[in-house]
Length: 362
Ligand SMILES: *[C@@H]1O[C@H](CO)[C@@H](O)[C@H](O)[C@H]1NC(C)=O
Ligand SMILES: *[C@@H]1O[C@H](CO)[C@@H](O)[C@H](O)[C@H]1NC(C)=O
Ligand SMILES: *[C@@H]1O[C@H](CO)[C@@H](O)[C@H](O)[C@H]1NC(C)=O
Figure 1 (tube, rainbow, N blue to C red):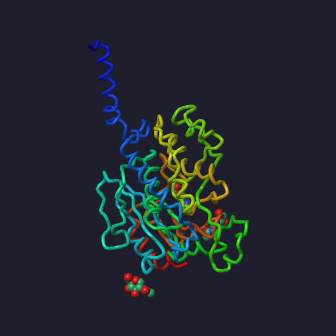
Figure 2: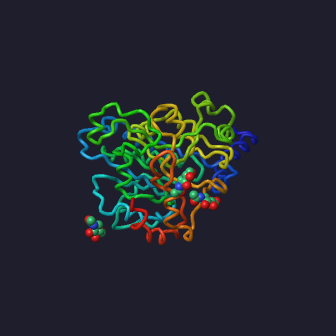
Figure 3: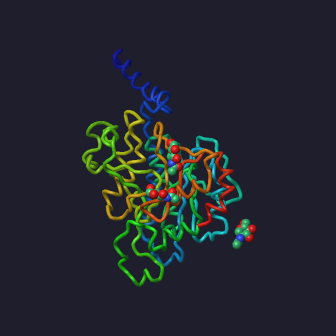
C-alpha cells in the first residue's frame, strides 16, 4: 500500500525530468539537459572501435603512401562558406585530404550536393547545445569517425560553419607536413636528420591553445560544484583554450580513448554561461597527458575584442578586403594563421571575389 506522501514525492520525482526538458534549452542562465544514456552508449561503441582499429597506424605507416589532413566541420546550420571551401579544395588530389561534417540532426540543413561535401555528413551525428558537453561529444565523434575511416588521416583540423581558409590548400598542407620553419616556437631539431632531409618531419605537434592563467578560470572550474572535478582534475591542472584546433593522429586517438576526464567534463553545470566545457576539455586532457606534444597556440584566428555573451567578433561583408586577410594571417607564433572565424554568412560573396586573387595566393 502506498501512503499519500509517497505518491506525492513519486509524482514530483517523475515531473522533474519533464520540467527540466521544457525549461532548460536556450537559456544560458539555466542548466542544460544531461547527455542521454543511449547517445552515450552509442558513442562508446564508436570510440572503442576507433581506439582499437586506429592504434596500429601512425604518421609513418608504410601502408599509407600520402599523409592526409582530415577537415572536421562541426555545424548546427547550413555550411555558409561551402562554395569558398569548394574552391580551396579545387584541383587538389583526394589522396591529400578527407572531409567529415557533424551536423545537428534536429536542425534542417541544406546539404551541399555534387561537390566535396557530398556524402561527407557523418551518420552518427547527434543534437548539440551551445556551451554544453554535447560539443565535446560531437568533436570526439568526428575524430573517431575520421580515425576509423582512413589510416592516412594524420592531422585533424576542427572547423565550424563560420570558419574560412586564409591560404591555399597547398600552403596549409606544406605548413603542417613539410615546412621546417612554419612553427616559430619550435626550438628542438628533429631527431632524425636523414628523414628531415627527405622532407618528412619526424615529430609532429598539435596546434592547440592551452592557457592556465586566465581570469575567470576558477569560476569555470567550480561551475559543476565545488569539489566535483576532484580527484581527476585538480584546479592547478585545469586549462582553457579554443575549441578549434589541429590535432595529430596520436592526440586524436588520445581524445577518443579518454574516459576518465570525460566522466567529469560531461557533468552538467549549474549555469551554462559559466561553463563552456568544450573550451576546457581538450586543452586540459592534452596538457595532462602529453605536455610536450603541442604548440600552445592555435592556427585559427579569432577576434575577441568586444566579445559579447561568449561570442567573438563576427566580420561583416563591408569589412572583407585584402588588408583584412593579411591582418588576420599575421601571427607571432607561426609563419601565418591558416584559418579564421567568425564571418557572417553574407560575407560569402565578397570572400569569393578575392578568393583567387588574395586568399589562395600565397
Ligand atoms: C582546376 O579545376 C577547374 C574546375 O574544376 C578546371 O577548369 C581547371 O582546368 C583546373 N585547373 C588545373 C590546373 O588543373
Ligand atoms: C576586432 O574587432 C574589433 C571590433 O570589436 C575591430 O575594431 C578590430 O579591427 C578587429 N581586429 C581585427 C584584427 O580585425
Ligand atoms: C602584424 O602584427 C605585428 C604585431 O602585432 C604588427 O606590428 C604588424 O604591423 C602586423 N602586420 C600586419 C601586416 O598587420
